[in-house]
Length: 189
Image (cartoon, rainbow, N blue to C red; front, side, top):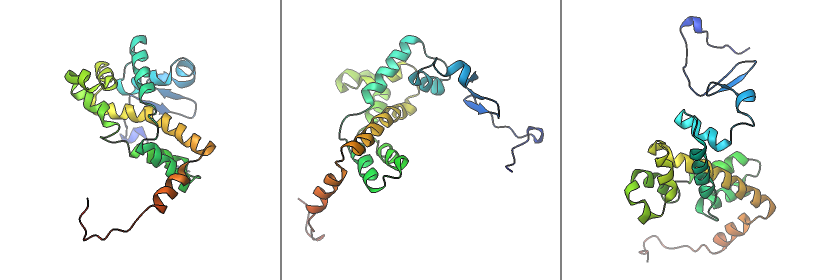
């Protein structure tokens, strides 16, 4: 039998997000089944979880538009990483999804965060996604997280396509069959 902390011992772990008992799950102070399911979109909920305020309908439209814009950009290194991880371990969907998300860094998803920080030159950088998120009042330190949230959907789509129409083995074999040994003492071109 699992022991649970006893509040009478002075133990408490405050949260404004989610709690659960044997009878209910509450999220953001709302009953999950009665107040949220079927009434709140996933994008609206994601915004609410971070900002701790329910977005207005217009904020929800902008936020969800940004998520759609960031979901998938084709055979990016993160998509390829997810597909090759799935090729190697098809029994580990979570590993393939994580591989795709772990590769989301400053070159491919960081521009969203950078743009939020450097809002003044957004027109020159053409990264309306970061500007839109920052304009919604979301913390700039978390903007890449929203890009990852959107990219999770795209990465899952990439894995689903890999199951239907695999290219991972071809990608691997193309590189493997064309790998050539280079003497480390020879300078790179």
